[in-house]
Image (cartoon, rainbow, N blue to C red):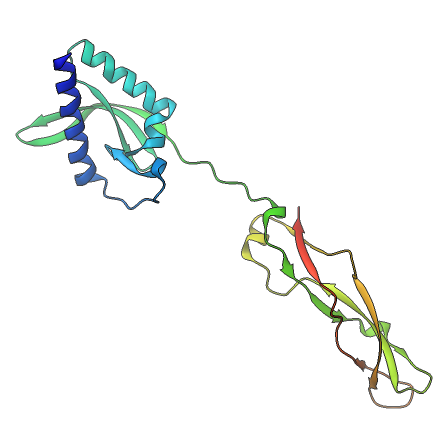
Length: 200
């Protein structure tokens, strides 16, 4: 038992040296992503590859032979034997365990924050009053010109809120030239909410 504890402590010391010398990479603050030995994170150590290498190291200890340890360089994982010679540490007899890249988080269109739409007047909907001084016009809610980049990245389509999609405003003077013509109505856009959400 004493020999096993001593070997475990020695192996831990070697891990610390390799961690400082070879794998000084800044990682997120998450405890699962923090490198704890030989450049490996807690998640990697607990992974099937990490557990397989750990079991191999336990068998090495029992058999009193050089101990295999998990070594990581980024997402690449290897099961190696640590060797010290002339004060230098290196790893030999490495078995490539493949990579463990965290799965990309799928972004649902419904998770994207809604945007404030824009009320745009429909010039073809203008209606003049009998005295040719006032008019009504339909405004349509449309998506803003600058949508978040994520919308295009995940191929989401903007959806305008169904309520108050089109609003007719009465009042205001007719702006235009010539009798019986009107190019726009001098009225304010609707104050109703104009919301844009996203879907596939």
